[in-house]
Image (cartoon, rainbow, N blue to C red):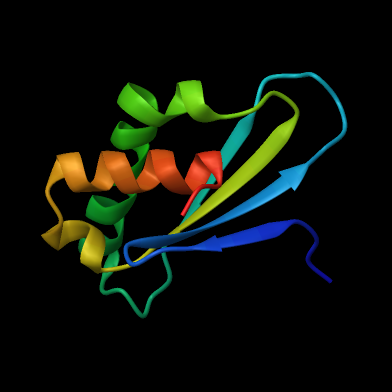
Length: 94
């Protein structure tokens, strides 16, 4: 059974689990085969990783695990839209 909180968005789903410690946050990325072939899935994953690295990492709370499930819409969004949506979902605001 999965624990934690799910934060759904148009571009992706963010699952957050509080580990109960103060260590650095961990991030995992998932892109299913429904999104497309390996090339498309890797493009989605690379865009998400870069948005987290450059903008959203400071929004993450210590002691949390984050799993970001990418959707195909990530490829059609501008990087600024992706950055704003990712920061909003990680902070937990609507």
